[in-house]
Image 1 (tube, rainbow, N blue to C red):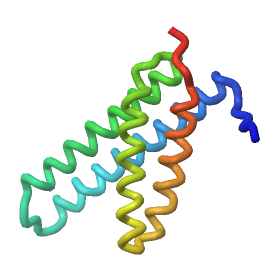
Image 2 (image 1 turned 90 degrees about the vertical axis):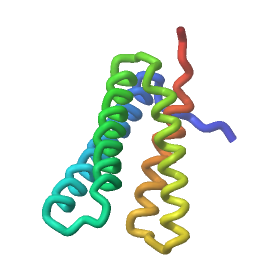
Image 3 (image 1 turned 120 degrees about the vertical axis):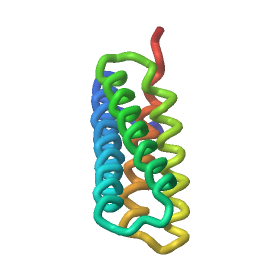
Image 4 (image 1 turned 180 degrees about the horizontal axis):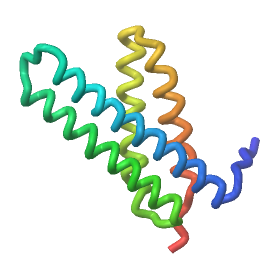
Length: 124
């Protein structure tokens, strides 16, 4: 059975949109953690700051990777693969904890983005 994918340009646009969505989700998580940290009692401020910084940097990285795909560059490929493999691992552990409401959408988003990323073969 042969799988028919959209054209290369269409796949690039899909991956760019999905990476932008992922980046915005991660940045939104960072903003949520920042607000949560400012409005509640924190046991370990350094751990929270580390997660917030990681969320903002990771989200920015995903946005930049999406920009790379949008402009037909290849510098977004490795970050896209790495981020989505990590997301699949996170979804796996969320499924193990029966946290289905987050695990299933995360797994679907990561899998679809990963498949489309891997089908874009660099031409240069």
